[in-house]
Length: 326
Ligand SMILES: Cc1cc2nc3c(=O)[nH]c(=O)nc-3n(C[C@H](O)[C@H](O)[C@H](O)COP(=O)(O)OP(=O)(O)OC[C@H]3O[C@@H](n4cnc5c(N)ncnc54)[C@H](O)[C@@H]3O)c2cc1C
Image 1: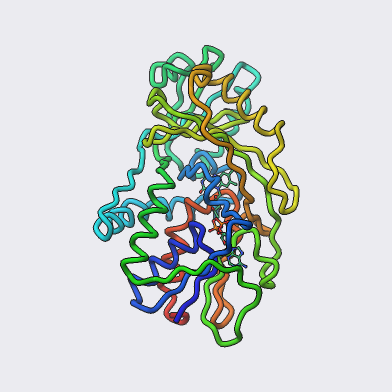
Image 2: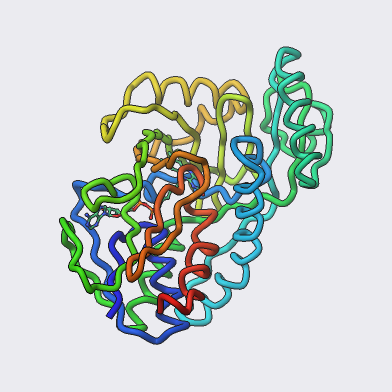
């Protein structure tokens, strides 16, 4: 029997890939709500292009590999559950707000060229033709057509349904130690320290959820903020990034900054309804790459930082295909 500790996107995705490939008995143990998953705060952007500069080229390549897996896996998920999880396809608009940000946009363009990520240069007027709600202060933009997003609640629901069809059991319990001979995948996000895992640095992120009247098609990013519209009538704008240990209390200033910055590039958000404020801890390792490694019968799958939703298919496949493990 295999135990997966952690019921965030990494635990659920990995358990699903394992159980459908290896037909083994799987139990998912997830802590009660005092350790909330970062997954629920995520904006669920599958955007290796827009995130490409944030870290190493290796992370960008992993992101591209994982994004390519998504359409096939979502199709398999739909066949197994009848739940359709749609990938939106309009891509990201990186926008320069005012002349002062043109230099920043130029450096982003150079990075995209170096990575080989396709993009298109747009004037402010051309950007507004594609996304009429953009502010008149946007002077230049880059369109990255390859980036995607999805509705995370729909994906999580489909994964849970698929897992229950494979008779996977769910236990609500906080694991405090590992039994020596147990075969385990540890996907505990930022709370891995009590299980003697690799050193991680929790990074608090705040995201604001609003209604979305379907007026915005692209994910939009400025230097300071992103706006991610969903096909389910919501949008997420974010995000702060603060090293506050495991503190999950959101700072008012974080939310205020996000909303102000988003309003500057998309004034129409004033008309949207406020739905929720989400807070999560991104688990960052010493490098920006995720830690997916095995020590005998224990697989660590942690340290996904800003990209856990994007990288879940890659992680699930990697562990499910490791014949020395399972
Ligand atoms: C504000 C914000 C925005 C983000 N936006 C994006 C984005 O747009 N795209 C993207 O790809 N990524 C994004 N991320 C990152 C992404 O959310 C994470 O990388 C991903 O959710 C990590 O998933 P996980 O399963 O590893 O961890 P988590 O989702 O944190 O899940 C870990 C689970 O393990 C459980 N657990 C912990 N310890 C124990 C224990 N001892 N016993 C039992 N259970 C335990 C917890 O209760 C939790 O349910 C964002 C993150 C934040 C905070």
